Image 1: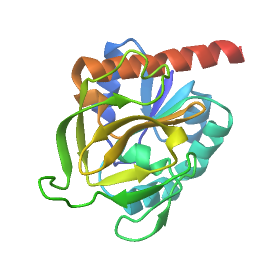
Image 2: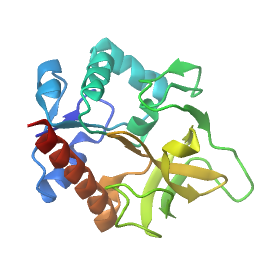
Image 3: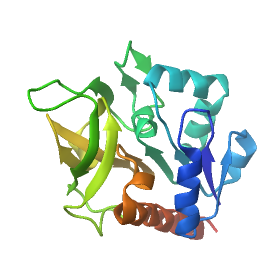
Length: 208
């Protein structure tokens, strides 16, 4: 069972439908006990970084997410949820993140010919093979974001070219992030979620 973290700032229902489609049992929850008992977690997110962190903190979910990460159970951050995995953000003002993957969130540069937000379909370039990326290469996924994850290259597993090379997927251990929306990216998005399902099942088997 996977828990989709509910803190009123994410596309929880569309993610749940996508997980149902690939046969990954899931529930939407904000309950500390249910999250820790789950086999893994997905952290969605839309909106602004400071408000999202405030919502997580007010519910005590920031500590819960750090706790489940410490157990080695898989976690996937989606869109803003990926950015929240990092150490900090400059969006509106400096805000600390969950600190699960090294890096800092910065505004996409406004360059001629590149509008901000970065919205629409863009091509993935795979930088490191993981269970979430090994079936990918050159496909297109759907983005909606104005900020990006500036993090060390060793944690970047896929990128997309825009005004800069945008980290589209990141990874440290069993913690993964996708800057785009897998649940809005058609069959390619489902393949990525299937990869997360594989990680979850493998982790569960190793802990039994």
